[in-house]
Image 1 (cartoon, chains in turn purple, orange):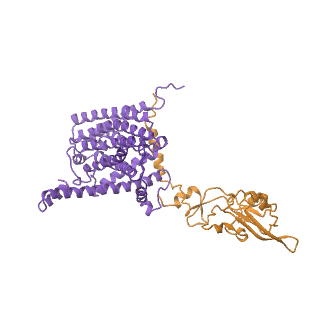
Image 2: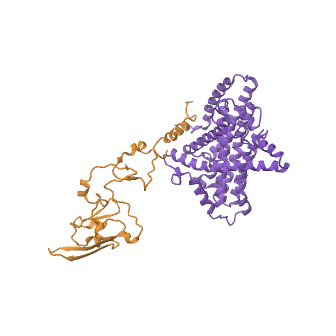
Image 3: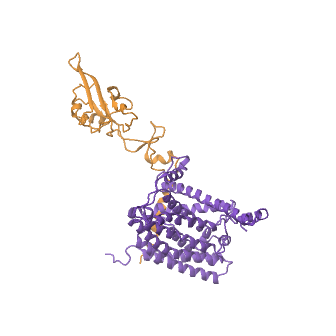
Amino acid sequence: MTLLEQFQLRLGGIWPDWAAYIVPGVVGIVVVLAFVVITVIIFIWYERRLLGRFQIRLGPNRLGPEGIFQPIATALKILLKEDIVPAKGDKVIHWLAPVIVFVPVLMIFAVVPFGERAILTDLNVGIVYVVAISSVSAVGIYMAGWASNNKYALIAALRTVAQMVSYELPVVLAILGVVLMTGSLSMTQIVASQDIPFLILQPLGFVIFFLGTVAEMNRSPFDLLEADSEIVAGYHIEYSGMKFAMFYLGEYGHALAYSCIITTLFLGGWQGPLLPPIIWFLIKVMAVFSVIVWMRATLPRLRVDQLMAFAWKGLLPMAIINLFIIAAEVLWLPETMPWIIVAVNFVSAGVLIVLWSKLFALGGGRVEV
Amino acid sequence: MKFERYGIGIAKGMAVTFKHLFRAPITVQYPEEKLVVSRRIRGNELVWFPDRCTGCATCAKACPQGNIEIVTHVGNENNYVVDKFEVDIGRCMFCGLCVEACPYDALAMGRSYEQAQHRRRKLILSKEELQLSDVRQPSGYARPKIEASLPKQSLLIYGGREGGGQKLSWLGLSKKRGRGV
């Protein structure tokens, strides 16, 4: 029983039924929304500082202690800016697109387990719900690109659709590996079954899922849709003011959401010794986000064809093979000896990565003189 | 088939950026922290030596802007006495032609690069303000004698937050600066 249901039961005796149902729900939604918005603001500050440190800079450090108020100043500036709509753009869709990008991100948090019972609704198909909802943002981005009546925006939108569709497959196949071992689609069940985190049990699945989600949240090195050096700002080139802020929030909200999902699926969620569950959860989310920032600081952006090749020729076959290996292990190997599974999976991950890297070696197929 | 190109390059790159986390930031936070620049810098200020100035006004003629205003009268020893020597650095473009023109080495470029003022009136410098002082030192630019007298110096020397004397080597910064990490 989640905390929310407990709250509803307690109110049930005193208040009329409809109020006892709605009020705790609204309270839960407000708490989760506040968590998302505050964490996103902290994430923006944290990413800028960390990126600065990776590049031997300082990052924003003027406003408040260590620059902690910088995102608030940025948000205020964005709020006060003029909202410019292109004269020949599609005004309704232009207005609707930021909402469609931002709202699904918030909806993901309905099934994110912050603690054993701290979850808004423990859907029995939680992870399917996440997969379904998270890809709706692609529609919003495509709408933004279409409505802007701008060639760069449209290029970015088309790239996004291709990218989202391509990377959805390996991500789902990697999730299937987790689901096979857990035997449940519920997020709390997935966490509860991780005595050994799936990061150790399924290293290859983790790598595939991590890279796939980084591509789906459109962050570097897969940030082709806003590749500054090619298409200026991509789909939000014609956006300003609060609409731009919605895209910005949506992007970082996506990062936060996927960090939470990665934590839940592969890092053991809230589980951990000594500290309270929520603290463990936040530590793991921060660690995942730090790795994403680290990748952004290091790796150059992929070309469009490389991006597609990486999904279809790299991640997808590896994900299928990974799924078959895990299915065989679940079927034939005894559950009492997980360390055999760990050893087999690590070896197979290494072999597969080395084999598949041959596909992407520079100069492949060329005759060296 | 050689055993190479299996993604180790990515790992190496990630290791490089990870090491950067533990280096001192290269940023110099300008108003609080300043680099000690070379004494041979051609700064944007003028230094005037009244002893050597004969009031010949060659500098004023050389100035493309006509910035230098010089008023003299004849003194007792058959010389010119400079009454007024004013430079409006608000219009000056620091071309240094006056320094090169002066036949008596009475003008030199200074070392400073911070000339901003809050009032335009303060940009017009009188002859007292233009003279040699602690903050107004001549650089070695176009004055080989001054240049020879300056000590040898390398670039990029860090002057501390407190300003002034302490000098650290650029690489020694990481120990000195504990913040911002």
